Amino acid sequence: RKLVTVPSLGALKAQAEKITMLTCYDASFAALMDRCGVDILLIGDSLGMVCQGHNSTLPVSMADMVYHTASVARGNQRCLVVADMPFGSYSTPESAMHNAVQLIQAGAQMVKLEGGAWLAPTIQFLTERSVSVCAHLGLTPQSVHQMGGYKVQGKTTEAADILIKDALAVQAAGASLLVLEAIPKELGQQVTELLAIPTIGIGAGVDCSGQVLVMHDLLGVFPGKKARFVKNFMDGQTNIDDAIKAYVAAVKDGSFPAPEHCF
Ligand code: KIV
Ligand code: NA
Image (tube, rainbow, N blue to C red; front, side, top):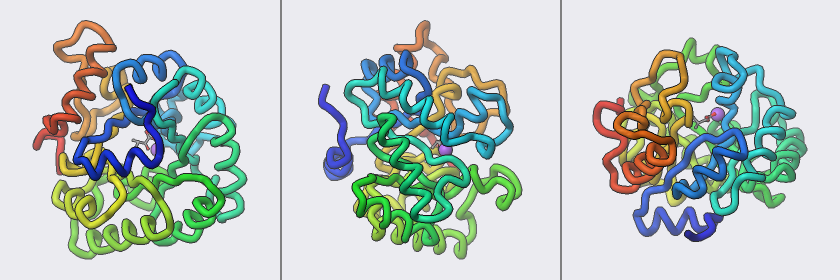
């Protein structure tokens, strides 16, 4: 299988081949996901919940992200490696650059930040300095207190319009990828058709350019309340490789997410 690079993501969208992303936090799972054909490994700050046992992503530090990013990079050969910038690590363009450099030097090829138009100057600052950026809109878990919980976003016309403007702003600022989390299926489709860059959905419908899941949710090992967009791919499988391959196949052929996983 071919190396997944930042430019090759755009080519996948152009060819209408779905992009598969999974969260990954260590070297062994990186090697496993690599050989199962996953395109992108995301070192998500969800590690604060699934690895560290916190009830939000807010306590995750830069040191935590660097440690897990370096572990994943050592296990990976072919996948694109994207690392989340944790809460508070990108409040100014300069601090974002300083922290992104640490993640890139740990082995990430791209960094992910949560936010829209307000982040555009930071995204431009990073991309001009050779740091590729994935933006994240919709349900942005680092804003849990402002959102008043983990809730579906972009449901009203006004909220959908703001999200569309945010998506255009992060693209114009230089983002090369956009994660859309927990928004109506139609809005996911609309944003994907409007943008040139690929979108990766999690609870954003089947029309996004690709999908992402937290690996613990895919394997059915996360003890918390299961979100609507989650599917346990261990159902009907006897080993983890087959579950990951089933996820990759279901994303590629458009059978995941099904209507019951969407808003
Ligand atoms: O932290 C994470 O795992 C994420 C994905 C759910 C997109 O940001
Ligand atoms: Na995240």
